[in-house]
Image (tube, rainbow, N blue to C red; front, side, top):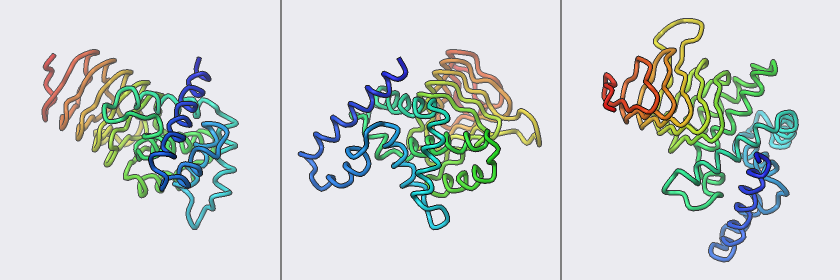
Length: 245
């Protein structure tokens, strides 16, 4: 089933790219390099991330080799990326094509780069993880600690200013708008960041602090400050995040 999801997303992306060759011929080289020249979703993902993250310190070919090795070791990272594309296409009313988040959304790009540094962090390569953590922050203006745990089917919408702390946990199918902070309350060590259950929506500019749980299906209004756990399928809003439903 999950492999079929990759194939479904990839086949739709290639179909859409071929249609665009006729309607936007100026994008021919761009579409070829990022999509049409590749044999699989995984290969396209490697090219996209290596293009975004390579620099004077780490050359593109070296980065391609590293990414291929990581994806070979853990194909779940590729599966998660395909699910991210699928869920964004499904849930974002501004998106009508599968290729849109893959090619143009920095929230998607930052999330896939995070998945790489999370693998590095968990495989005793913390220094390289922190190097790319900084790159992600500078390039995409998204700050995700490599130790944070994030599921699949995630939408970082707009993504600018998103901060996700070290011990944060985000389950599947969560939507996070721009300028959201999942932070701590100042505790120096230990489990100190929020736990976001599946199907949660966090509105723009919301601040969620401490080792609290945001229950399954809950909604947090834009600009809210949340300091206490939120029950499943409820909505909280406001500077003191009052329960409204």
